Length: 596
Image 1 (cartoon, rainbow, N blue to C red):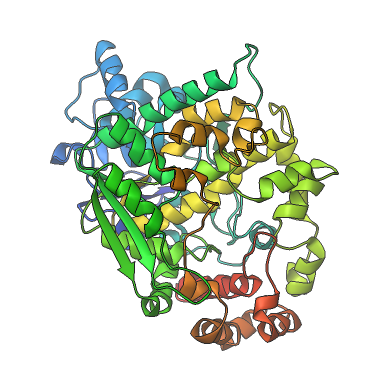
Image 2: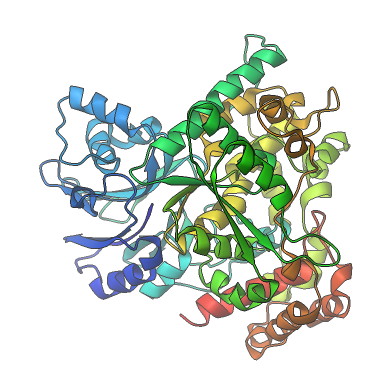
């Protein structure tokens, strides 16, 4: 896990090494163990390393293979690299390191752009081919690892986050009106390639891009998720057995592919508890587990220790309970926003930020249960969508969109009004081929588009703020492929009264405490930010009433005043605070754009 950046010129000028240095400095938290740079004619590459696999200097980056004429910067982990390494050795390649980075270099030399099809893991990387003077960018199938770029004038720059590109300078930071519509409709999701800034784009998941010396871009999609039933019929028991085996293999691989200890973020929910149980089932002992809690409020408890404690006790883990005072949350919020690659509306971002700070003192790598709810239909809105009538878009919109188009038009000023861009995009994505039914369409959209810019990006940004690598086994692409082809009832649980994530509950029965399996779906307790009142309300009022916000002229003041007058009366369909959405975007813009 690392931070990457670079610049490619399309004229006769050399890359701006001062800009590269500024970008590398911004990436320092993502890679505290080593910094390196490389330049060759029109290109310059920068890298900040978090050493996880092959801790020696042989695995430092940028990694150069002069014989092959290739230079690489890479962020992520390739879980099948040992097998690929053996295959490449058999094909005549020689290695000087023991890690996964050099495997990517040799794989590109052997298979060219098709190398990405052979990689299992999370990755974002750039390869400079000295021979044909081209830059190759690639991103993993679910966008677990971020990759942003700015193609302006006679140069292209890329980086692991937007603030890094802004630190390089010369970026069009005007707001993208279409992206803004997505942002406020899909609770901060802006599907690739757009971002909220006109001058910054992101490489879509499951895509690669080649850029030549003239600045011509060739985009390639190398993978798509098939959500159709297989030709051969399987019983529920056979599906469950297949998923059990795949999950066991995945969590064990995510644990063992590292040269440092790997912990587990144990929230007390089904997903993270199952990771711990499967690792114990595979013979792992003395697992490092971490849980976070906050002080209780009158309305709710601030921790889920009552569920995580029994799991830690059952499997005799080396458990760490981290308690955060509610008074610490709001003052640390600006720090969390400072580490957001893009605006994020999830209020638990600061919880992950504070958790990562504590966990990073013990380990460099953790496994997390992120992705299971989207892959296995764990949220309350999926059954509601399934029961609804109308077109796929109508069914989806009625239970998911934060605002209908008319409300968006009422919220923003004239310069940002336009067509229903989000409705059109979601209708197109749902209608893509290779999905048998409506819920298959929805879960595929979630896994390949929505999850990328919500929980996955949030976990990556908040953990990497402290040089902590978060692994998400529920987004192993082979596991997701298996889940996508399962009958919907094994996810929705509309038979036998099992409830959501039925197949995971079947796997867990007898392995985990029943109280964990049968508990209602929980969310990260965040009492200090959940209730819009007191200091939190004052905080948002100050942001939205600031001179910067008023001069920006993004929001209609009537709309802002209406929300401020009754902050607890305006929630989205999935129970988010509409007032918080407005304040968070403005705070992000003040932190990153105004200060650039």
